[in-house]
Length: 328
Image 1 (tube, one colour):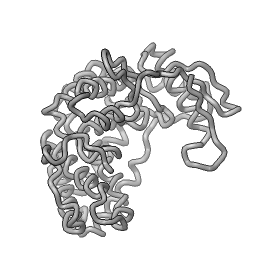
Image 2 (cartoon, one colour):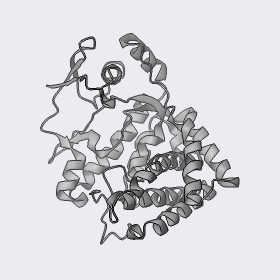
Image 3 (tube, helix red, strand yellow):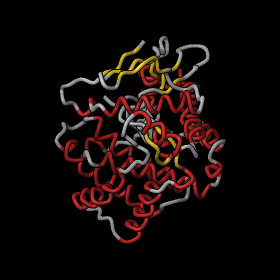
Image 4 (cartoon, helix red, strand yellow):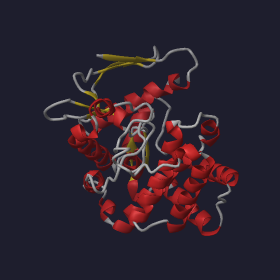
């Protein structure tokens, strides 16, 4: 078994509500939806601050396998990851009220809406002013529309664990992957396409993730999601929502600019931020959406290349930077 408990050291990841959220999400998926894609809950004592979960060994985190063996050895497990994210969205669509009831039955915590987008507007403007790439005119209009999409998901409202990355899926190293999603401490109902961002834009672990259309990951995710959310089959709706979701991640990562400015030349995080902006632009362009916003993302990436000459490299060069190269 795995025991998770609340420490009393004041760390931001030790808030007591996190156990309540994880317990509600796991009970909701296993008991209310009968969706076996997470560890089983063996027991919980929220007053005492601990949660006992099924040990999923010998499964291991997918990101560890990729770092150890390279992405080519685990392409099918990456496909399983993409499908699992889509299946989670499909299975939980239309069940937000049931999840809310489950949350309220466990505690007063009711994380049913992702509300972090309201601050991105001001943050984007502040960073853009610093870099000399102001958000004005049609760029501002498209950014407003993108953030509105994420704040009001409409048909794309679904449950997420709040951290859809390859470190939060456990798979068997050989044979059938028999995957399980983990770490639901930040679970909430929000825009389903936010979980698809990691397939298109590098998360914290990777320098780049390559072309998800060419390697099939984009289709695996979209097909699985469409089984529960038919709107995902509509190119215009899906492309706009995906572009908006990727943009939100790019803006969140762009907030790290002051930290990265202080890093030594050659720091991988600088490369990663530039690739995040350019990969977001490529995703929007591939779906023929948000043209002015994607142009601003490219301009901002160009400004960073001038600011950091050490990071002025081509991360789409697969010979030098294979997809899913770890950030050092």
